[in-house]
Length: 360
Ligand code: NAP
Image 1 (cartoon, rainbow, N blue to C red):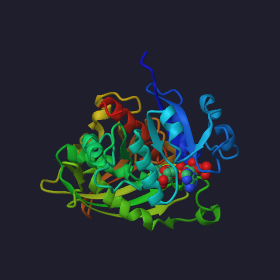
Image 2: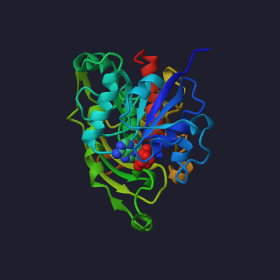
Image 3: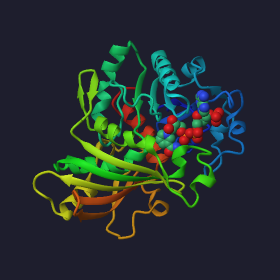
Image 4: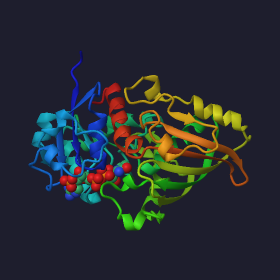
């Protein structure tokens, strides 16, 4: 049997970090060998560091409980212990950029959940089913930065997963979609733990202005073209989004209106494109790839976060309410799990693709 690749998690004690530990527990390719968090947790065992704030439905995995927690930014132990880093720590953008670059320069591939590098022109924002080819910027990235084994790849904001994947499925089937309006209803766990105060969110909906720019800039880059050593965003794609924090624990829902240029397809044609879509991860049968990746439903009252967020082990997008619309022409509602597909699970799938393409 092939030896598993030892991996590390930066921000291992947080909401996303805890999800990594659960998802990597019996992973066929990766095993957790290194954990890091803030100075508050450093120096303790992982079990001690998360005592009283472990938020998963099952106990801390045995193999991780006794591992020491290092401070984020520590390089030597990481280099000795692992060959890949998942990054999910929270601090200022400048500091995050510097820390992630330092690990990459030291020789470690970094797959990041942080937003700090998403708009860096030679760093991909990867959705494995949508733009797997953007990983092919890695040789150019290594050349420009002078890195040998290290590299930087980011995951998109958790709010964009629910609609970018279906829009890609439609575009891949030949429908030209350039104008989109979305209302993104984002769950509480998207803000980490403990997140917003209960007094702010119970019986309430809170605008998220800081997410609204990400809601169009990131898809423009994800759909962009790889040209030499940079990714050119698709500026002609116009997306306008309202983002709101809603009192749901996990699962981001997007209500989406979109226009199709030229001939107006039937709803059946759109349904076929969405429900039959398969991407490179499905073709390669990567361990975390859900199949189907878009779970299409005609049920009027779905998708719903509580019923649908765990579809495909939290990795699928559940999509329903596909209808014609007097505004823009068509609409649907889609839902994905923000801490799984939108964070740890999506990053693990990205790492599986990195391995399959020989970049680890
Ligand atoms: P979180 O629950 O608040 O966890 C934050 C983690 O960062 C903890 O491990 C914490 O360590 C560590 N940390 C805090 N301050 C630090 C510092 N100054 N230096 C180094 N490490 C520090 O947040 P989260 O929800 O897991 O999010 C982590 C990252 O993923 C964020 O960048 C977030 O935007 C992104 N993200 C989150 C989601 C989601 O759905 N939650 C989705 C996509 C992306 P201690 O425990 O020691 O304090």
